[in-house]
Image (cartoon, rainbow, N blue to C red; front, side):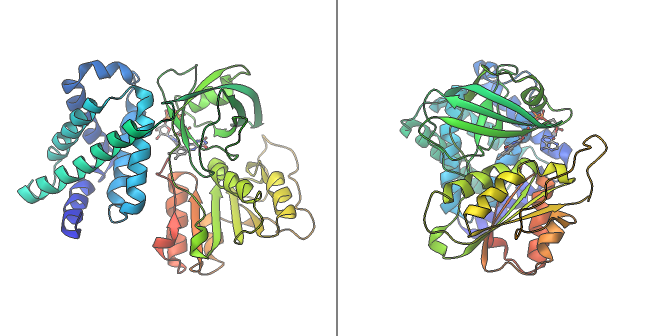
Length: 387
Ligand SMILES: Cc1cc2nc3c(=O)[nH]c(=O)nc-3n(C[C@H](O)[C@H](O)[C@H](O)COP(=O)(O)OP(=O)(O)OC[C@H]3O[C@@H](n4cnc5c(N)ncnc54)[C@H](O)[C@@H]3O)c2cc1C
């Protein structure tokens, strides 16, 4: 797509993302139009569509923001197409979804008119999305989804569980990718989780799950999961990775369970002989939020290319976690105090690094902003679609 078309698309999409109510209205219109065209598809979706609507706008936002970088956008669309097979989505549903998207977009209250140029630009984008997704879905030889059994569930904090599974056959994901997951307690409510270990031939998977209060699925994952539960897992998504060709060292910044995909990559790198240098900042509110710090210290002791820097906003644990936090082994970085983005920014410019940020949407945004202010170019920073 040329720059004029991208500009037209972005200016229209800015109206969709102008506020939470705009986002919601757009997504409601999309699904109303979609289900009017293919009513039998309604049963493929959960009864409560709030999460689904938020996911739709987040994915579109990611696509629209990345339009000038087709090299990463097309693989992302192909991944989405492969992943959508788990819903039972067929080729003909893409035409209905494309037309619903155009209708919903036309109905947004933009200050600018829906001109023929704007219409043509959106048609082109919709064709790109639907063709890339459906072609990739048709071409994929892997199953639409995998099933796995929970083999351990460890409550490492009151609101955080480490859950391990063994899948019936290994899932071919790259370290740093994420997958969608469905649990027996919440049928049809797929949620994204990032494996915290690399893929292996035994089908072992590890997820770190934080309970979001008021959430539909994460409280059930943390509170109700039992050994023996059967989980369903969709195709791998995302492109967090270390670019070995760039010759650049790496800066990784993790907030909370955002550690998972970065940890998987570091573990994957530990299996190789030669690696770029990696600085991994891992942050939380309290010292106890650094629930996996001892594993990271062990990794850095045996891998001299890895530096781990713990960061917390508070110096002491809260009253509900009255246990001392572990001290770093001699020679390793002491914990630093302050908001993660600010602390990383205080080190100056990271312009010579490839940067990965992973955590809550607000953490990713504030950290990326702090890095840019300190001189790190925006093109060096990658992150997943915001959670
Ligand atoms: C690429 C990606 C990877 C992810 N990886 C992980 C992971 O490894 N581990 C993990 O625990 N989670 C991960 N998530 C988040 C996860 O997919 C769910 O969004 C989260 O668990 C909440 O689901 P829920 O059903 O409990 O809440 P929902 O019912 O979906 O949401 C309920 C309310 O909580 C808000 N909310 C949703 N998520 C958050 C949040 N993180 N913080 C604060 N408020 C929130 C929503 O806006 C909504 O108002 C990932 C998300 C993405 C996009």
